[in-house]
Length: 127
Image 1 (cartoon, rainbow, N blue to C red):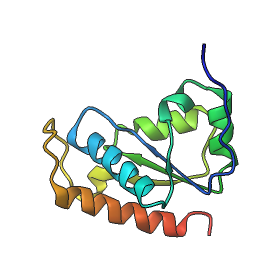
Image 2: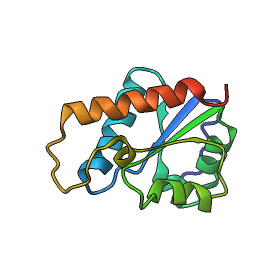
Image 3: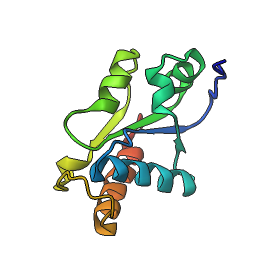
Image 4: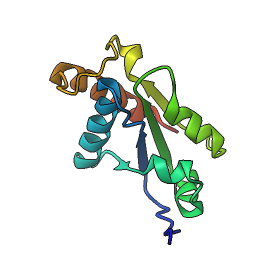
């Protein structure tokens, strides 16, 4: 049975595509690092896509939201938009000059590049 718990009240929520490519996995690594560094809470995009009401409410009630997509296919953005959530900052990893491929040995410089871009967005979110 699906849990319908709301986690409202988090200051920053981070949702990552976590897709099956290097850039998708970079989004996952960045979201984890931001969470570990207490810059936001890595949140479940699948729960939003599944329209789990408590999860959608958590995102909607959050002060700050950052959505990270790996590529222009924009799975995370489309998931958010389909759930009626459109008040968020947005980063696309390939827009940072990182080429998409299926190599899961991530380049630490690429992860750092994406991490810094996301930190800049979090500094601007709903300021």
